[in-house]
Image (cartoon, rainbow, N blue to C red; front, side):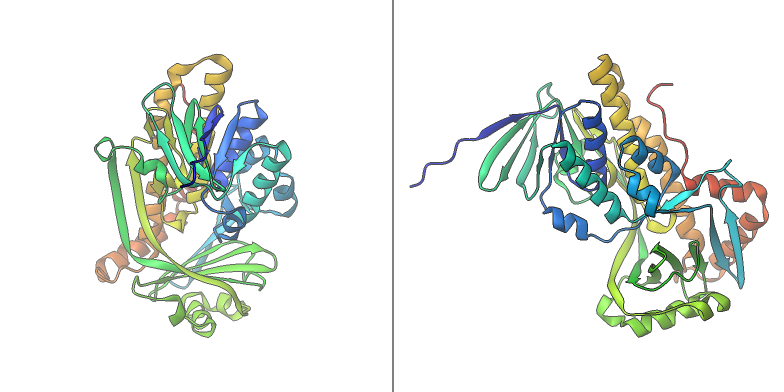
Length: 404
């Protein structure tokens, strides 16, 4: 009978569970200010980089990436967008984001590239990361001495820490480590999903086009001047294998204004996937010394391009809170994390819900709601107040302050 290996004990300030962009960004910001942190990820680095995700970055996230010192490639290769288009009822209306927000814009730069930049920056700093960690488990969360146990390359570890950041997504261990009776869940599941296609074809437009049609919603997006990302609203019963490229392109053209469809360049798909849509929030976002960040605490429909950006605003709040704790001894702000984050979370949830409700086809309530959608779009695009409300939310509302 083999003798068990002794447990190796590690010590750090902040244990970060999850190496997606939110965990990496938090670690980068903390490391630049001398706050020790260890990152734990159950997947390999290659797997994390293989995930295809959106890449429309709010002004606040762009500024935060610059503050983290990882914006060089984004500023060189990203594409600042000062407007977006809404297409409906045979009309195309451009919303001038910059004009209605005092000059703010969004940046089109893929989440994969953001993750790559952050990974390389962490490696350059020499900050410890444990990819392919198994059985990651937080302990003693309500005590002054929490810790995390995990297994890496056959060795058992105990990571003693001051705080734990749960950046491990909707299916991660962090939220599940909080007793169910301590959380309140708010959720809406939508009766459709998005079928996305990635192709090496020039985008049909220099800016995103959100299209409402009687056949369902469509979105024309991009990753670069030579790579496009398109989406179609589909039923939850649909399967990717039922959508060969030719069928996808044909249906996309049917949902776009004729002049846009005529200019659409098609090509072989690099990737296709279907994502269900849901709105999800848990309250509070904190349990003892565990802080939930990003998808671990909230999910938004992708219609408003808020998922990654909302995670970044959580990171901003936690990062600035921990600066106060470690550099000023301000532990009084710790209980404010959840309420501070949730103020912005619910505003982003509202915007994403509103965009989804306004642009998608709901088969169970056709006539009245269809007229309401068109009336909403007509008002929005003919009112300075409506355009300003849309633009302010799309480029991202200001980050919430921890202090009144």
